[in-house]
Length: 300
Image (cartoon, rainbow, N blue to C red):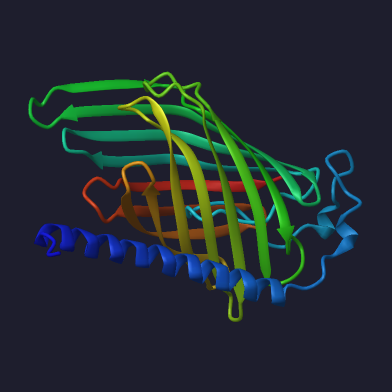
C-alpha cells in the first residue's frame, strides 16, 4: 500500500534520530566494556577512612576532580572527611518557544560536596538566587520573577576506579526539592545519572554519561520521562589549562522530541585545591536553550 510522502519523510527523520540514539548507546557500552577490562585493582589503602576519620592530605588526589564545567559528571568522589565547593557564580540562559522568549539568570548555583566514605559522597545543590524574564512574542507582554531557587540532593557512589586505574564509573541518584520562589514548577523531580571517565595517554580524557529523569510537564502538570546521553573530550595544555568539548542530547519520551547541544569550556588550575572555569552551551534546535557561564571550585 502506498503511503503519503509526508509520512515517509517523517519515518525517515525518526529513523535518523533513532540511529543517533543507537550509535551513542553503542559508544557508551563499548567504552564501558573496554574500561572494565583495563581497570586495575582497587587501592584498598583508602578504605579505612570516613567522614569521622578524614583521609590525610598526603593520600588525596594530586588533581582535584570536579563535576564542572560540562554536563558530563565526574565519577570520582570527594575524599572522605573533606569538603568541596563548586558553583556557577553566574549563568545566563536563553530559551525560545513557539509563544515566548525566556531569559534566566542564576547567581551562585552551588554544589556542596562532602566525602562520607572512600567511594561515597553527599552533594547538595542550591540555587542561591534566580531571576526569570518571560516575553510573549505576539503581544510583547513581559513577566518577571526572582528569588531563591530549588535544592537538589544527590548521592554519588563510585563503583570502579575511584583512586586507581584509567577507567572510572559511578551512580548518582538525585531528587529535586521544590523550594523555589520564582517558578510555577512546585513539584519534585528525580533521576539517575551514570557517569564514566576514561583516561588516555598524553593528558587526554573521555567522559560519558547516560541519564534518566522524571520531569514535570508545566503544561499538563504531569510527570514524564526524559533521557540524556553525553560524550566529552578534554585535554590539558601548559599543565594548568584544561580545554574541553562536549556533545549531548535530551529525549522527551512523552513528546518524542530530541534536543541536541554542543558546549565548550576552559578550566584553569590556580592551585592544587582551586580552579576557575568559563564556557558556553549551544542548543542546535530553535527551542533548545543557549547558556554561558563562569564558575569556580575549591577543596578543603
